[in-house]
Length: 532
Ligand code: TXE
Image: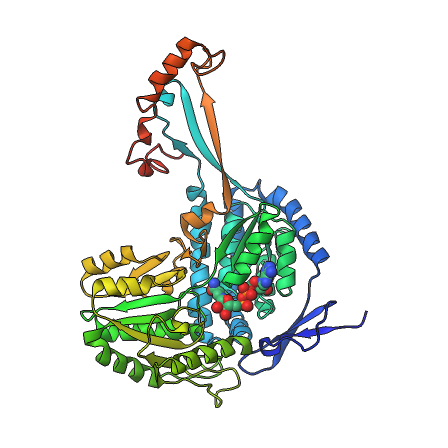
């Protein structure tokens, strides 16, 4: 077969539709240079990988937690020994500054790895559950957490290292095997994850990486792994959920956001301005939890906007290898075009471009200037759709209620932040906001906290990654129920008689299981008993 090269140069598909593709070229979006080529895995390759993964799972599921811990800790050591090399690769393939490759990808995932390596055993230990009157009758219940099997991970390009690696480490600690299909824009970083586990001594086929575009991703879903962990757009998330339903594969979907930041006039405005700039422009705004809408209390809006503009003027943009670079390249021409369209919508709909609003040609082809937009309103097109770029639209509010309503006026609900010195107000507002994470006087970074759940309300996703909640997505709970005193038949067994029915009526009235009364939620994991 002729060697057919499928180039994703700057994210632009080739003009000709090609069906038999066998190679993918990876480019540095900041410089346009080719940085490597990878195989475009076919559907058969992917099905084989999943089949081999099942075999690897059968061995791995029987390993002890100390064995799993050893692998994850060794993988950490490999990363630490190649820190600069890995950071350079992440920066080269995604366009993000070298500094962010370390601070926003490598450092947080290393922390997550050590946390789950040390704590997965405790978090997944068997739990005895209180069962009320049944326990007086000699019964006991415990919950045992079993691994699922093969976990398919389909990440996007924006955090090509931290997201799939963190999910893989958690899946492995829970006893699963893993197949990763990295984004077509960042396949080399994906392959690096496979190499790290290999160097750490992972058993054959325990962690595999298949490369290719959406078709390879679709083939992974069709190969019926036991779980899909997906990060990407709402549209692709829906396709995956639909395809996964064919095999009843459960999915965790992380689908982005339009995250609001609410700044009250009583906030530390200088700090809030620093936070807004980082929250909106880190990773060139290509984070699912980027600040995409800023609502500032009207009385402080003029002062606050000048603070934002002042800060933006000081930001240096360029190829991410420079250690003084704050804003790198966009990941692809396609992503940059979305940003241009959204800024154009703002212009046409009457908002003001206070600073930025155009490509930064002196930095390179795929650079967009950090942009502050004032006089934004929620009825503007780009206040509703995810931009995923270095833009910060600013709108105003007068009352607490209005701020909450504006923040909630979105199909998304991933994160939000509230800025005020009045912590009671901050926490009150936080609980009214429809988002998976709400921070008070903090912004964006909580994906970096491995201990806490990550995921969205509304169209921002389904399920959770990270935290106990994320770990629970990677196991199946088994209820083991034992009757110690198996002597007499139960009253509810057959044959039924009028006398028995009368007894059943009697049963229905009192709460048989007292711990099912409120507050029953606290009994769900802890109230019922301790781990065994
Ligand atoms: O995502 P896609 P894209 C948002 C952001 C961005 C938009 C599109 O707004 O502009 O999504 O980005 C694989 N079956 N986010 O095009 O298409 C694909 O190969 C299985 C938010 O990059 O969703 C890649 O590995 N897999 C977000 C992954 O899905 C399929 C991060 C993501 O691709 C597939 C990135 C299919 N049918 C973008 N089609 C966030 N949540 O942070 C594609 N893929």
